[in-house]
Amino acid sequence: MLDIERLKPIHVTDLIRVGRDNDGGYIIPKSIMLKSKSLLSYGINKDWSFEKDFNSINPKSKVHCYDHTLTFFSLIVYTFKSFLGIIFRSLTLDKKRLIHSLNGIKIISDYFSFFKNNIYHYKNRVWHNNDKKSVTIKDTIKKINSNNIFIKMDIEGAEYKVFNSFFNPGNSIIGMAVEFHDLDKNSKNFNKIINEILKDYHIVHIHGNNYSNIIPKYNFPNTVEITFANKLMIKGKIKMSEKDYPIKNLDQPNRFSKEDYILNFN
Image (cartoon, rainbow, N blue to C red):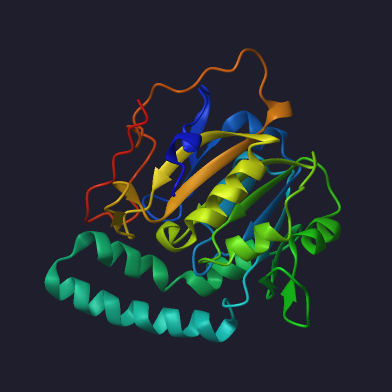
């Protein structure tokens, strides 16, 4: 059974959107981001807008990104598809998707202009054990060699195996933005992971991904993005949020052509 009541966020006043419009942006407390010395990002695909915004607001932070699916060949394929998309969207007068395709043809130059100096992309899968192609979260923390780490995780369902092998992140991680997939198939494991995380962290924001379906039994999205803040970072009396989600002028639907899912904890 999905324990939805445990997912109600606490009240915080400094939430900002980091990353692009629609899919790829996350809501996190600005104070947490400014206190971060490093960003560990698991799963970037063809979009590093979150990482770019994070680094722009906190330029002294180290950024380590992990994604085994992002290769030079995949960037070439994406560029070619973007060229085709420009032709098709021009004919159909689809302005929003046309802009997306126009940005797509610049992805190779954008990749090499961003990933340099203290910003790295490692072509490894983040997994529950390590081998030649996979690394664990503990491996990535050791490699970045930092405290005050913020984690962003969108690894398409692998988060359950990863978290099951990593229940004690310690105080080196001050915040996390995690996308949890397929809650209908993983409700027991999801509840267990959330309960473990909440021993040391507060939920400060939640958003339903409208690319997923609604679970009829719970009237709740099958995929959710949850932002956690280390309890040591939250000062003063803790109050539960009275907001409805999505939050106006912050949240945006992942799929722009579809209405956002409303989450009401009140």
